[in-house]
Image (cartoon, rainbow, N blue to C red):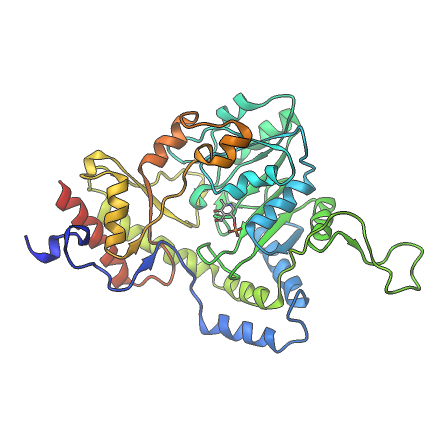
Length: 396
Ligand SMILES: Cc1ncc(COP(=O)(O)O)c(C=O)c1O
């Protein structure tokens, strides 16, 4: 066997000398210039560039209001609060997500109730959601897994039937559409994350988007200390600013917003590049037994945040071996996600246990996210393909 055929984990030479991740930012000269200009402006904390970024995202998504906050997690926190989730309320969401999705309930002392996902799309299964409805259900938090939107109409029907508030966790999905409507444009509100691995980045950052003016006002106030800056009766006392509730400092800076605006200008090219990489992966992997490509629905146009394949025994090794073999090649693939019912927080506080969500758990057993980011060049793409092929060939 030539050294080229020997996986690094078995003693071969790693495909990459320096590590590559499963995702990452693409920063252009224009991005850098935008941040530099913001740094020279009068505001380096929340100022006019944040407002411009909010208006640009609202316009892009097609909603009336956008409120920038420090992360997707902060956006979920405030959206859950503005939705009025509180003690005694149950909020239904997916177990196949990042913990922050459920924290929109947990932060607000409501109970996260998990419903299983669909085996093919990995998104919440509307039938499973229906099974979890009780008289205490107050809301739904569907998450658009990897950028592929959920079945929006079914979720909204359920919400209408049971008078529920829907918060879309669209952290993966800015740039995606469902029946030609942008992800994030549906009621009641949606949240985005601008972490560097996401579709556009502000380093850290997030956003709440909504058409509901009252909801937006509540989020805006909570973001910034829940202060009333000009209380009635104190018009001639400009210093008289009072705290109305327990608010937060989730303010973002003009520097982040400048980067966000510049990244939003590039979103179409990012989407295109992500599509091209996936097309090449699909071509290379379609005939590898035991490597299953993501299922795409007809009525969606995802901006793929992740390229998450599933590995089964026919591939030659299991997912654990595969991840470790890829890491030995210095390709830092990742698993999205360890189901939330496996986490101590959800087990100890809410009584979840392993084995409750057959689809989410079957997906977890095989899933792995391969590198996907717009700055990935053709050579890197081919090297990742070579690594997958050599691991498969060695173990079969
Ligand atoms: C589905 C989902 N929701 C929420 C978050 C939280 O976003 P952030 O990292 O910006 O707090 C993430 C981030 O990883 C996510 O993937």
